[in-house]
Image (cartoon, rainbow, N blue to C red; front, top):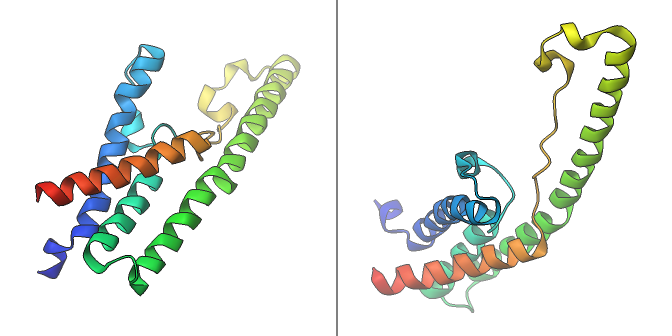
Length: 157
């Protein structure tokens, strides 16, 4: 039953869901189209990974204090996660863009040379996911989302 009263866990889960949900209206404002697939996708504004780990660290700080060992663990986990979101995962996304363009160009060449136009589109190519990581601003606002949402939940609950 302790799981049901674990504030840092629930704050972190709430931050993930909130950050994923808010991506839809933010994308709508930017593009004037609703994309419900953002609810379950990686990347985008704000970073739900950053929101989750900062909510976790904020919840731990509230409950155990900033001098506790568990806060140190959660803070380091948050730093590594946020660094990874802007580093390795972002670069993997950039590489996916280039690879997808190479595949598209190669597909055009093969289509012209061998008549691939008769095959279904799914058999022609499989695109890599390009939106893997985050821009630093997305990580910043994800982190800010996690902290503010956790503080709000703490004072409401």
